[in-house]
Length: 255
Image (cartoon, rainbow, N blue to C red; front, side, top):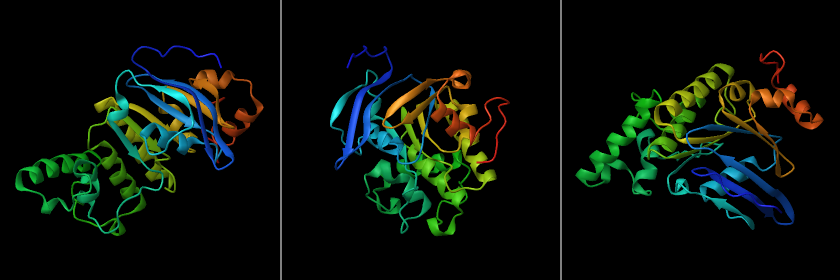
């Protein structure tokens, strides 16, 4: 494999390979992620998108490849899991505070000085996603869209420089999906983390990202913007996109 040097200041992945058993999920994935931009990763289910995010976040290992991180982004990561991964027995404020305490919860049991600092940061994150009046509710008391917002607040609470969002609108109705994506863009514009979003919701994803990566069969088969995707001649990718998004008119079609 011919390797290209990492772009200065950019998170660069070269030739990433990952297996689960004998099945290759990533087969030499390579891409760059520029500082302060939003990148959308699209592709069929089971194609390695979530695996890629978890590798970048350090949740999973990989067998081969290199990750160049000149800005030390990988030590300042916020990750929003596809399934939300909220703790059912903890309140909203405690769920959001988890990254700040390493699991030493509930917040009320912390020492007074630490408790005040952690509570203020977690409350601010919940306020940013519109849930400041729900800090003591349990996850079961929240709607699906509200639980997604709690997960987003938890990913943001440590003010990450790298924000990884795994299918943030999955399972939501169209209105809630639009609210979540608009919120993500608003928070990105405010805090400017390098943001990577995996999503099947092309209707809401494609118009807001700076760059699109099509991950098919373990590799990045397309990297570019929406106009370049419009002109890209690949039957598999065009069929996948056209079932979810009308590039010609930039109006959505039913998925």
